[in-house]
Amino acid sequence: MIEEIFLLSIVALGAPLLAIPFTRKRASWLIAQLALLSTLILVLLAALYAGRPVPLFGGEVEVDPISIALLVIGLVDTLIAVHGSGDLVEGYPDPSGFFSVVLLAALGILGIAFSNTSIMLMTSWILFSVASFALMALPKDDYSVKAAVKYAIMGSASSTLLFLSFGIMLFLSGSLHFIGATFTSPKLLSSVLLFLMAAVGFKIGVFPFHSWLPDTYGEADPVPVALISSIAKIGGILALYRAAKILAGPMGFSWLLIVALFAAATMFYGNITALLQGEIQRLLAYSSIAQAGYLLVGAAALTAIPGVNREWAVYGIAFQLAAYSFAKTGTFLTVKAVRRRGDPPPKLESLAGLYLEHPVLAGSFAVLIFSLMGMPPLAGFWGKLFLFFSVVGAAPWLTAFALINTGIAAAYYARAIKAVYFEKKTGGFQAEPSMLRAVAACAAATIIVGIIPFFLAFI
Image 1 (tube, rainbow, N blue to C red):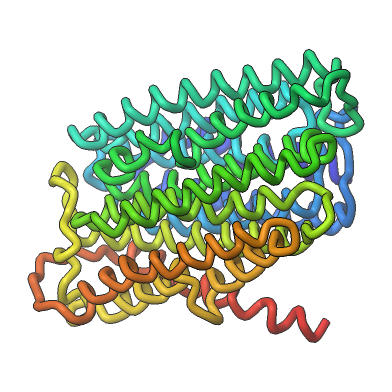
Image 2 (image 1 turned 90 degrees about the vertical axis):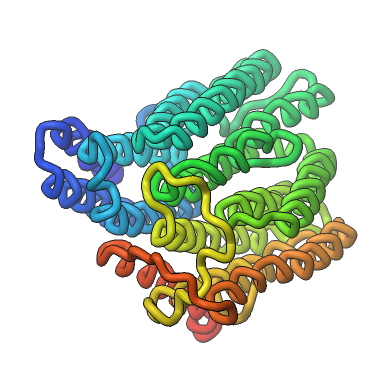
């Protein structure tokens, strides 16, 4: 049964993305939402049959609860983002193509989530990456085209490094599969992980592979960024999780140390640089870099060594990805209220007085910023709580460093709240109905995810 569900999921995304280019603008928007909703229902149905990892199609695919959870987050967020884009892409040269490419990217994420071989993962990675490059360029204004070119160049480097890392793994293990492979030279696995971290780092903005991200997220039209900023993180973390199945065990403490050093450098660089930004999009872009560092704290704890709580690491990754995804989608869509297509990136002060004209939008924006800050009981609080304490027994220095960085981040997140609620009104807001609904949905989802642990405590 689960094989049929997986195939139906591919059809639910694949058939509409081929049909959308031949439909009208509003119809393509509705079809894309129905396709994502259908896929989400199918993935949730698959969860009923995947209480443990289930290999499919001769081991090419593995459906497991963790991948399903992360994929559900990605699909829900993408569905909200697509809904919010409905009124915002009307001025694009090809609105229907926008929604078709979104489904192509979602199809790539689906493949990454359930990959159990190097070939399957790399194929899905390329599919997702190419769709992301195209999505960034579709507004076709000067800022978006420049951002897409930078993204494509760095994305090509990312894919090349991913192929190299999996090629070395194939050479060392003699197997394309992630499960059950054994290595002839375990000492060389550190080099594999370094190449893998570079590949994933380019995709999700890990220091020092982040250089493209501030220019891309900080300059491109906010609508595609609202989509890409979240699903790129989910795709990268899913790829790292799949690779951890084969690498984390044999590497042991080396896995923890290497990933933890990348996490620490990324958190520190992202947060310190975000403090210096005067443009709201660039502030959110550097915040995305810092958030990648927090997620890597959980990735560091995916190895089985004393002092590491792997279960908490998985919970932390899921909650933090949910907090990040909903927050970035909602905040970047909010930025669209003050930026017209083709305009330069707006200053932080452009949000001044938002609460007077659009109190619901301002309140939703505040909820999302507080979640990124780690304010209880929102989703971001639980994400940081589980992530930081998952490594405290094996690497207390990393937990302490992460807590310090959370304090640093609060300073620039407070600047965003101050601009919305405590600065003089500048006006000029253009909040479309679909965007208002989407940002409110992101805030609601953030609150709902934040109260889930309270219910789990009674189960």
